[in-house]
Length: 102
Image (tube, rainbow, N blue to C red):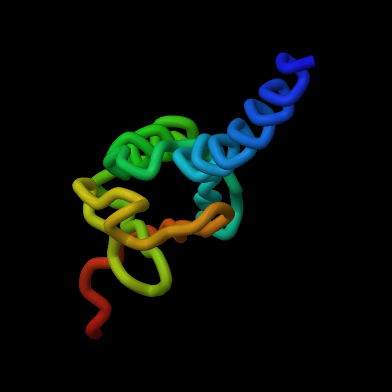
């Protein structure tokens, strides 16, 4: 009978660990208005990996793409933690435009 009392304790101890495991990874949507790609990455992973993977999948040159989060340019060395991203956030991809004057 004394074994029955400790048994409920581990499941309650496991429940707080599950949100930590879920919060370690984020699902990030990357869109260029034509395509949407979802990535699951760790909070501490540099976004360069995600940016490279998106460009490779879409056949784009990374040098011609600009990634924005909430209207702010994302650097390859940024990570979701430094940008305070949450699960389900979106990165926008825009084609770099040079010039513009007549």
